[in-house]
Length: 251
Image 1 (cartoon, rainbow, N blue to C red):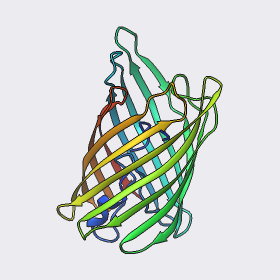
Image 2 (cartoon, helix red, strand yellow; image 1 turned 90 degrees about the vertical axis):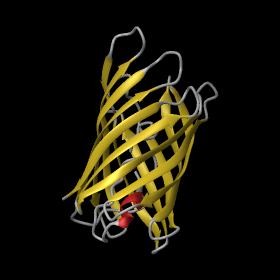
Image 3 (tube, one colour; image 1 turned 120 degrees about the vertical axis):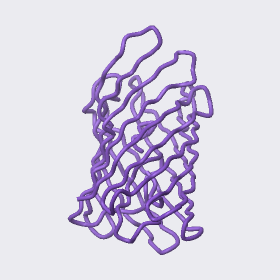
Image 4 (cartoon, one colour; image 1 turned 30 degrees about the vertical axis):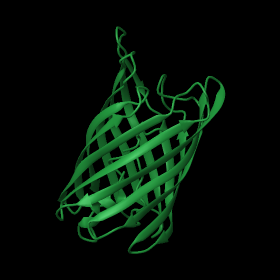
């Protein structure tokens, strides 16, 4: 989640705003996490697949699934989140494939402000050292953030996030800041799209900044089920490109 190049964490709150009021609002796809929370006694199950490859001369690629996010409401303003990227199958040029398990993350969201035009939500997540090398940091890693969106019209919304996270790297604690801004557009009551830019900036000088522009399309099969397709392009040779798809269902 913290890189989302972990993505985790595929996430656009406003994409489903074009549908009826009781339609599912998924936290995938995309880098930014949505401002909306799941209602109490309701569970969102969000799953996906992503293939990523870098621009560097090592020519590394990775398959990741099921990119699982489980969300359930604690109150009208808060939700509990359980996140697990799942299995990573990494391949570097002229090297054998390496399969590993990602760390499990737990956290939640709390609505700070809500209106018809503007929303502000706090995000907090802890990644737990449950995975295997090279996908685990072998430490408890926190992430905190502020999520926002602003409706420009009935069919167009701006959104973004400001986040900070910490992780363990070679027995040293590394910090990074993450920023994202994007826009979502609705075309019909069931079809929407988004486009966003995000960057991850580590405190460690030997680590490179990530800069990516990504976008995608969402489609509501029913009020309780959304499918999506997304793609990302790294803007530097140290930033990964990716392509993915997924589904979100509400129970």
